Length: 62
Image 1: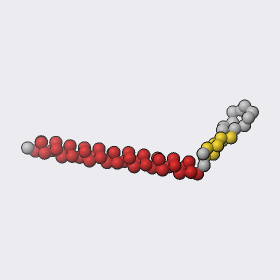
Image 2: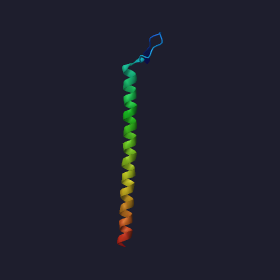
Image 3: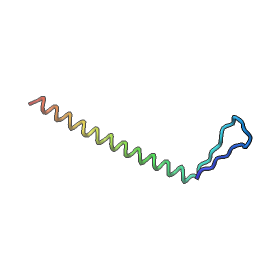
Image 4: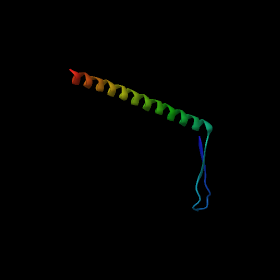
């Protein structure tokens, strides 16, 4: 749940926003989950690249 408080009079002051701790925790968890997914994909790609390099080396040495 988010709340925004603004001055009803027009001015150039910034808007203040307050976010409930549950929202922050949910967002942090989602970011953490996405980071883990990205790292897993990078790991998988690195593993595949190493396998391809090994295959190329085998072909070159034959």
